View (spheres, rainbow, N blue to C red):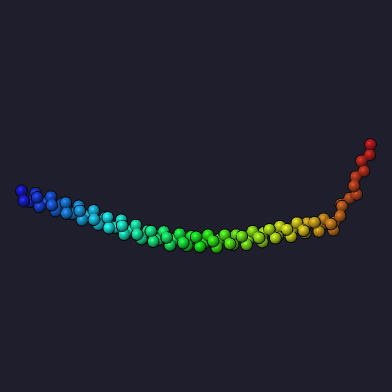
Length: 91
């Protein structure tokens, strides 16, 4: 009878120790993941700001180039003039 009670108490103690160990691991990993997530979120925010500023600068440059191309097209069209005299429509 004592052996059965000892076995039951030992099994319960082992299960309790395993549950406590898993609980500690989950809590420990959860804290580490929270710290990692915070650090990673800050890095992503900084990279997003840098990317946004770079895209703004590229957009300004592209807008400037588009304006220059338009001016160039107008200048070339003025230099070339009409390619032929206007057609005379006769009846």
